[in-house]
Image 1: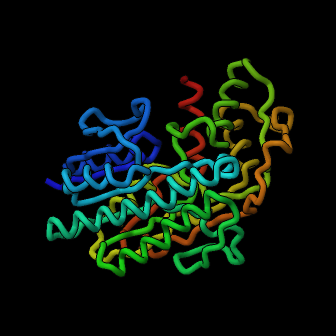
Image 2 (image 1 turned 120 degrees about the vertical axis):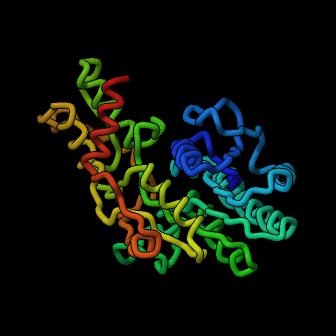
Image 3 (image 1 turned 90 degrees about the vertical axis):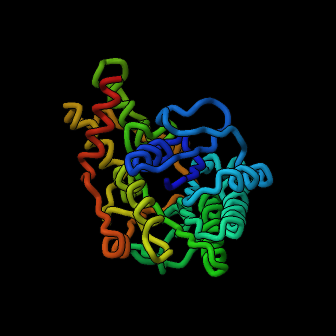
Length: 314
């Protein structure tokens, strides 16, 4: 039986990844810290630990001897990265590099490949000069979160050159009803549900003009598994190739809830605008579609509708 080790298993992507791996007959182990994960399947074996404790994590990996390692753990808030840049660098960057080194140690000890997948981010491109971005787009992060992800992204190439079959999956925005409420998309769909139920009248957001490439989280997780199983370890942009503004997302959410006069309910607050926020991020996933046979299964409006329906039901 294939054995997989997943960090960040308690998050949106970790839960979907565990489901996808279990459906493929994989024995899944996850690293958790703090409170119990909300979305993890009961068949997953959980191990309490801290990703930044490199020695303990290496010992655990050597004991488990996984065939596949997926690093999804991260401090994923761009806003929080400005407040705690050192912590973000330790978790997203340094700990990821240590995990690659530990995976390589398992590979040497077992005498077989250990496939490593790093969940990277479009934020490594910062304010890109060209749209859409692909695997050859220069890295130019403009916030501490993107900088920390760039550290790990570059390390993937280093360890791949050493012999570790490592992949960096450059994930563009991907959403689902499991997205935490600190993210703008869930703030929108939760706020729309409050308006629809008569408990609020206004949705307050930051930069309405920022454009993102929004996909369906289970689709992006499917790309991670496909990338791990591909014979050639290489990097992949995972994106829909379509962009929509934050305003588009809010209007679509309001419309799905039956609220057409969106101007009356939408308000901006400059305090919510991020510093150095990229105007537009759009990914070219040609390589993933060609080499992995991957493609999105849900449209932008279908993603928004699924999130609104879930929050209306809540």
